[in-house]
Length: 281
Ligand code: ADE
Image (cartoon, rainbow, N blue to C red; front, side, top):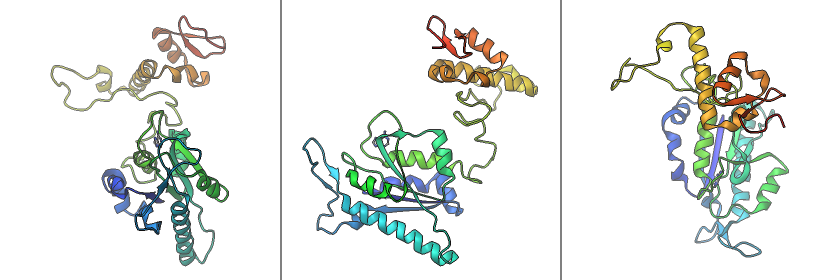
Protein backbone atom coordinates (compact mmCIF):
# COMPACT_ATOMS: atom_id res chain seq x y z
CA UNK A 1 0.00 0.00 0.00
CA UNK A 2 1.19 3.50 -0.82
CA UNK A 3 0.53 6.36 1.63
CA UNK A 4 1.25 10.01 0.90
CA UNK A 5 0.93 12.71 3.55
CA UNK A 6 1.04 16.41 2.67
CA UNK A 7 1.70 18.65 5.68
CA UNK A 8 3.40 21.83 6.79
CA UNK A 9 4.96 19.83 9.66
CA UNK A 10 6.70 16.82 8.06
CA UNK A 11 8.59 16.21 11.34
CA UNK A 12 5.24 15.59 13.05
CA UNK A 13 4.99 12.39 11.00
CA UNK A 14 8.32 11.00 12.32
CA UNK A 15 6.48 8.36 14.40
CA UNK A 16 5.68 6.66 11.09
CA UNK A 17 9.31 5.46 11.22
CA UNK A 18 8.76 3.62 14.50
CA UNK A 19 7.20 0.36 15.68
CA UNK A 20 4.56 -1.40 13.63
CA UNK A 21 4.31 1.16 10.81
CA UNK A 22 8.10 1.66 10.72
CA UNK A 23 8.66 -2.09 10.44
CA UNK A 24 6.02 -2.44 7.73
CA UNK A 25 7.85 0.29 5.80
CA UNK A 26 11.22 -1.39 6.31
CA UNK A 27 9.75 -4.68 5.04
CA UNK A 28 8.35 -2.95 1.96
CA UNK A 29 4.70 -3.57 2.91
CA UNK A 30 4.04 0.15 3.17
CA UNK A 31 5.41 2.85 0.89
CA UNK A 32 5.05 6.04 2.98
CA UNK A 33 5.92 9.42 1.46
CA UNK A 34 5.70 12.57 3.55
CA UNK A 35 5.70 15.87 1.64
CA UNK A 36 6.15 19.46 2.80
CA UNK A 37 3.25 21.54 1.47
CA UNK A 38 5.55 24.59 1.44
CA UNK A 39 7.50 22.97 -1.42
CA UNK A 40 4.56 24.01 -3.59
CA UNK A 41 4.57 27.70 -2.60
CA UNK A 42 6.32 30.31 -4.73
CA UNK A 43 6.59 33.39 -2.53
CA UNK A 44 9.52 34.32 -0.32
CA UNK A 45 7.61 33.49 2.88
CA UNK A 46 6.25 30.16 1.63
CA UNK A 47 2.75 31.31 2.52
CA UNK A 48 0.11 28.59 2.91
CA UNK A 49 -2.69 30.55 4.64
CA UNK A 50 -4.77 33.67 4.24
CA UNK A 51 -7.67 35.46 5.95
CA UNK A 52 -11.14 33.93 5.58
CA UNK A 53 -13.65 35.42 3.14
CA UNK A 54 -16.63 36.68 5.11
CA UNK A 55 -14.44 37.51 8.10
CA UNK A 56 -14.12 35.63 11.35
CA UNK A 57 -11.25 34.35 13.43
CA UNK A 58 -8.24 32.37 12.28
CA UNK A 59 -6.75 31.68 8.88
CA UNK A 60 -7.69 29.37 6.01
CA UNK A 61 -5.26 27.27 3.97
CA UNK A 62 -4.88 28.65 0.44
CA UNK A 63 -6.01 26.40 -2.39
CA UNK A 64 -3.06 26.87 -4.78
CA UNK A 65 -0.32 24.98 -2.85
CA UNK A 66 -2.71 22.10 -2.14
CA UNK A 67 -3.73 21.93 -5.80
CA UNK A 68 -0.13 21.86 -7.02
CA UNK A 69 0.91 19.33 -4.37
CA UNK A 70 -1.96 16.96 -5.07
CA UNK A 71 -1.59 17.22 -8.86
CA UNK A 72 2.13 16.44 -8.56
CA UNK A 73 1.56 13.46 -6.27
CA UNK A 74 -1.28 12.03 -8.36
CA UNK A 75 0.79 12.49 -11.56
CA UNK A 76 3.79 10.79 -9.95
CA UNK A 77 1.63 7.77 -9.19
CA UNK A 78 0.36 7.61 -12.75
CA UNK A 79 3.90 7.90 -14.16
CA UNK A 80 5.24 5.22 -11.82
CA UNK A 81 2.47 2.86 -12.76
CA UNK A 82 2.97 3.46 -16.48
CA UNK A 83 6.65 2.59 -16.18
CA UNK A 84 5.81 -0.50 -14.11
CA UNK A 85 3.09 -2.21 -16.11
CA UNK A 86 2.82 -0.52 -19.46
CA UNK A 87 0.13 1.95 -18.44
CA UNK A 88 -2.48 -0.61 -17.47
CA UNK A 89 -5.00 0.52 -14.86
CA UNK A 90 -3.35 3.35 -12.92
CA UNK A 91 -4.61 2.79 -9.37
CA UNK A 92 -6.64 5.71 -8.10
CA UNK A 93 -5.77 7.17 -4.73
CA UNK A 94 -8.37 7.76 -2.05
CA UNK A 95 -8.01 11.26 -0.59
CA UNK A 96 -8.42 11.24 3.20
CA UNK A 97 -9.04 14.71 4.65
CA UNK A 98 -8.88 14.82 8.46
CA UNK A 99 -11.33 17.36 9.86
CA UNK A 100 -13.47 17.56 13.00
CA UNK A 101 -16.40 18.13 10.61
CA UNK A 102 -15.88 14.78 8.87
CA UNK A 103 -17.58 11.39 9.18
CA UNK A 104 -16.41 9.40 12.22
CA UNK A 105 -13.33 7.23 11.75
CA UNK A 106 -14.43 3.73 12.76
CA UNK A 107 -12.94 0.25 12.62
CA UNK A 108 -15.23 -0.38 9.66
CA UNK A 109 -13.70 2.55 7.76
CA UNK A 110 -10.19 1.39 8.76
CA UNK A 111 -10.97 -2.02 7.23
CA UNK A 112 -12.32 -0.42 4.05
CA UNK A 113 -9.31 1.90 3.65
CA UNK A 114 -6.88 -0.96 4.38
CA UNK A 115 -8.13 -2.59 1.16
CA UNK A 116 -7.20 0.40 -1.02
CA UNK A 117 -3.88 0.42 -2.86
CA UNK A 118 -3.15 4.10 -2.28
CA UNK A 119 -4.21 6.73 0.27
CA UNK A 120 -3.31 10.43 0.26
CA UNK A 121 -3.77 12.28 3.58
CA UNK A 122 -4.12 16.07 3.72
CA UNK A 123 -3.80 17.16 7.36
CA UNK A 124 -4.70 20.86 7.68
CA UNK A 125 -3.73 23.49 10.21
CA UNK A 126 -5.56 26.74 10.97
CA UNK A 127 -9.32 26.73 10.26
CA UNK A 128 -8.99 24.17 7.46
CA UNK A 129 -8.46 24.07 3.70
CA UNK A 130 -10.28 26.29 1.19
CA UNK A 131 -13.43 24.30 0.32
CA UNK A 132 -12.75 24.42 -3.41
CA UNK A 133 -9.86 21.98 -2.99
CA UNK A 134 -12.22 19.32 -1.59
CA UNK A 135 -14.71 20.01 -4.40
CA UNK A 136 -12.04 19.93 -7.11
CA UNK A 137 -10.66 16.54 -6.11
CA UNK A 138 -14.09 15.25 -5.14
CA UNK A 139 -14.99 15.52 -8.84
CA UNK A 140 -12.12 13.18 -9.79
CA UNK A 141 -11.38 11.00 -6.78
CA UNK A 142 -12.91 9.21 -3.84
CA UNK A 143 -12.56 11.89 -1.14
CA UNK A 144 -13.28 11.08 2.52
CA UNK A 145 -13.52 13.81 5.14
CA UNK A 146 -12.91 12.01 8.41
CA UNK A 147 -12.98 12.93 12.11
CA UNK A 148 -11.22 10.84 14.72
CA UNK A 149 -13.49 12.03 17.54
CA UNK A 150 -15.65 14.76 18.97
CA UNK A 151 -12.85 17.12 20.00
CA UNK A 152 -10.86 19.72 18.12
CA UNK A 153 -7.12 19.29 17.67
CA UNK A 154 -4.72 21.97 16.45
CA UNK A 155 -4.18 20.11 13.19
CA UNK A 156 -4.79 16.93 11.26
CA UNK A 157 -1.32 15.39 11.75
CA UNK A 158 -2.18 13.48 14.96
CA UNK A 159 -5.37 12.13 13.31
CA UNK A 160 -3.22 10.92 10.38
CA UNK A 161 -0.97 9.03 12.81
CA UNK A 162 -4.05 7.50 14.42
CA UNK A 163 -5.63 6.48 11.12
CA UNK A 164 -2.41 5.14 9.58
CA UNK A 165 -1.76 2.94 12.61
CA UNK A 166 -5.32 1.59 12.61
CA UNK A 167 -5.11 0.87 8.86
CA UNK A 168 -1.54 -0.48 8.74
CA UNK A 169 -2.11 -3.11 11.43
CA UNK A 170 -4.86 -4.59 9.24
CA UNK A 171 -2.59 -5.12 6.22
CA UNK A 172 -1.76 -8.76 5.52
CA UNK A 173 1.48 -9.77 7.22
CA UNK A 174 1.87 -6.59 9.28
CA UNK A 175 0.71 -7.98 12.62
CA UNK A 176 2.72 -11.02 13.74
CA UNK A 177 -0.30 -13.17 14.40
CA UNK A 178 -2.95 -13.18 11.67
CA UNK A 179 -5.58 -13.97 14.29
CA UNK A 180 -4.66 -10.95 16.41
CA UNK A 181 -7.34 -8.65 15.12
CA UNK A 182 -10.14 -11.18 15.01
CA UNK A 183 -11.22 -10.32 18.58
CA UNK A 184 -10.46 -6.59 18.42
CA UNK A 185 -13.06 -4.39 19.96
CA UNK A 186 -15.24 -3.24 17.04
CA UNK A 187 -13.96 -6.01 14.74
CA UNK A 188 -16.72 -7.42 12.55
CA UNK A 189 -17.52 -11.01 13.58
CA UNK A 190 -18.10 -12.98 16.73
CA UNK A 191 -17.47 -10.23 19.27
CA UNK A 192 -19.07 -7.62 17.02
CA UNK A 193 -19.90 -4.38 18.78
CA UNK A 194 -18.60 -5.44 22.19
CA UNK A 195 -15.49 -4.10 23.86
CA UNK A 196 -12.68 -6.54 24.55
CA UNK A 197 -12.46 -7.81 28.12
CA UNK A 198 -9.38 -7.87 30.37
CA UNK A 199 -6.23 -9.88 29.60
CA UNK A 200 -3.61 -11.51 31.85
CA UNK A 201 -0.14 -12.99 31.52
CA UNK A 202 2.52 -14.51 33.81
CA UNK A 203 3.34 -14.46 36.69
CA UNK A 204 0.30 -16.29 38.12
CA UNK A 205 0.43 -14.06 41.19
CA UNK A 206 1.50 -10.40 41.26
CA UNK A 207 1.34 -8.25 44.43
CA UNK A 208 -1.04 -10.74 45.94
CA UNK A 209 -3.34 -10.63 42.91
CA UNK A 210 -4.12 -13.88 41.13
CA UNK A 211 -5.44 -14.64 37.67
CA UNK A 212 -9.09 -15.67 37.11
CA UNK A 213 -9.22 -19.43 37.74
CA UNK A 214 -11.06 -20.18 34.50
CA UNK A 215 -8.15 -18.89 32.37
CA UNK A 216 -5.82 -21.57 33.75
CA UNK A 217 -8.46 -24.32 33.62
CA UNK A 218 -7.61 -25.36 30.05
CA UNK A 219 -11.36 -25.55 29.37
CA UNK A 220 -11.71 -23.68 26.08
CA UNK A 221 -15.50 -23.53 26.12
CA UNK A 222 -15.58 -22.05 29.61
CA UNK A 223 -12.81 -19.60 28.72
CA UNK A 224 -14.69 -18.38 25.65
CA UNK A 225 -17.87 -17.94 27.72
CA UNK A 226 -15.99 -16.09 30.47
CA UNK A 227 -14.41 -13.75 27.92
CA UNK A 228 -17.77 -13.05 26.38
CA UNK A 229 -19.26 -12.23 29.80
CA UNK A 230 -16.35 -9.94 30.58
CA UNK A 231 -16.86 -8.21 27.22
CA UNK A 232 -20.52 -7.69 28.11
CA UNK A 233 -19.59 -6.32 31.56
CA UNK A 234 -17.05 -3.88 30.15
CA UNK A 235 -19.32 -2.76 27.32
CA UNK A 236 -22.20 -2.28 29.76
CA UNK A 237 -19.99 -0.10 31.98
CA UNK A 238 -18.09 1.91 29.38
CA UNK A 239 -20.28 1.95 26.28
CA UNK A 240 -23.92 1.32 27.18
CA UNK A 241 -24.80 2.86 23.80
CA UNK A 242 -23.28 -0.23 22.13
CA UNK A 243 -25.52 -2.55 24.16
CA UNK A 244 -28.57 -0.51 23.21
CA UNK A 245 -27.63 -0.77 19.52
CA UNK A 246 -26.70 -4.45 19.69
CA UNK A 247 -28.37 -6.66 17.08
CA UNK A 248 -30.58 -9.09 19.06
CA UNK A 249 -29.53 -11.88 16.68
CA UNK A 250 -25.93 -11.46 17.93
CA UNK A 251 -26.94 -12.34 21.52
CA UNK A 252 -27.39 -15.89 22.76
CA UNK A 253 -29.41 -17.04 25.77
CA UNK A 254 -26.45 -16.76 28.12
CA UNK A 255 -25.67 -13.22 26.85
CA UNK A 256 -29.24 -12.23 27.66
CA UNK A 257 -28.97 -13.64 31.17
CA UNK A 258 -25.67 -11.84 31.70
CA UNK A 259 -27.17 -8.57 30.53
CA UNK A 260 -30.20 -9.03 32.81
CA UNK A 261 -27.81 -9.59 35.74
CA UNK A 262 -26.11 -6.30 34.82
CA UNK A 263 -29.40 -4.41 35.13
CA UNK A 264 -30.47 -4.50 31.48
CA UNK A 265 -33.93 -5.55 30.40
CA UNK A 266 -35.06 -6.97 27.12
CA UNK A 267 -37.64 -5.07 25.12
CA UNK A 268 -40.35 -6.60 22.95
CA UNK A 269 -38.05 -6.29 19.89
CA UNK A 270 -35.24 -8.22 21.62
CA UNK A 271 -33.13 -5.10 22.11
CA UNK A 272 -31.84 -4.21 25.54
CA UNK A 273 -32.34 -1.07 27.59
CA UNK A 274 -31.25 -0.23 31.10
CA UNK A 275 -33.95 -1.24 33.58
CA UNK A 276 -36.24 1.67 34.27
CA UNK A 277 -35.72 3.20 30.81
CA UNK A 278 -38.13 2.69 27.93
CA UNK A 279 -36.92 0.01 25.52
CA UNK A 280 -37.96 -1.15 22.10
CA UNK A 281 -39.04 2.27 20.89
N1 ADE B 1 -8.41 18.12 12.97
C1 ADE B 1 -8.67 18.74 14.14
N2 ADE B 1 -9.43 18.01 14.94
C2 ADE B 1 -9.66 16.84 14.28
C3 ADE B 1 -10.39 15.66 14.57
N3 ADE B 1 -11.06 15.51 15.73
N4 ADE B 1 -10.42 14.69 13.65
C4 ADE B 1 -9.79 14.83 12.48
N5 ADE B 1 -9.09 15.91 12.14
C5 ADE B 1 -9.02 16.92 13.02
